[in-house]
Amino acid sequence: MTGTATNAAPERAIFDAANIVDADYVVLPRLASAPAAPPPQIPPTPSIEGMGMLRKPDAPPLRSSRGGPMFWIAGIGIALVSFWVSGGHALVRQSPFWTTAAPASALTISGVTSRIDASGLKPVLFVDGEAANDGMRSETLPPLEIRVTDNNSNIIRYRLGTSNRSLGPGERFGFSSRLDVPKDGVRTVSVIFAG
Image: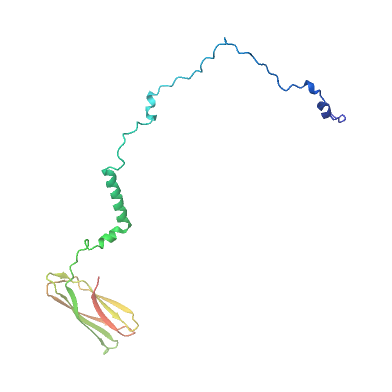
């Protein structure tokens, strides 16, 4: 192992080229009496009695390409539900066929007057008027809302209760209220039914 190094590769390369054989083959004659090879054995197909569920079902008889009545009923139903959910309910409710004319309330407010009384230490706003039932049947009188607008366009609202009093046909309900005068003065006073 520790001997002198020699170059062994040149010794291997120098062989006699005549001793090298590429391939040897022998051609055999064909004999007519050679026995024929038996056919390959194919294993028998296993019984599939219990495996019928894996078979493809027989094709159903061909029907017409148009859907039956249940198909069309379901399709139209889905279309109507989609229309209704996507906003159709708002459109239908605004149509003239859906709305019924609500009977106009026969209650009215009239004779509203307002005045400022500055005779005391503090000025006071008096608002007077009357509510009337001009209809043919009794109506429940809703609360009244007094709106006072000052000179800077600020609106101050006061609620005047009516105790849900019922007004008969032609009956009148007088009201009067005493309010503080806004510090910026009074431009307008109005009275409406509170909703």
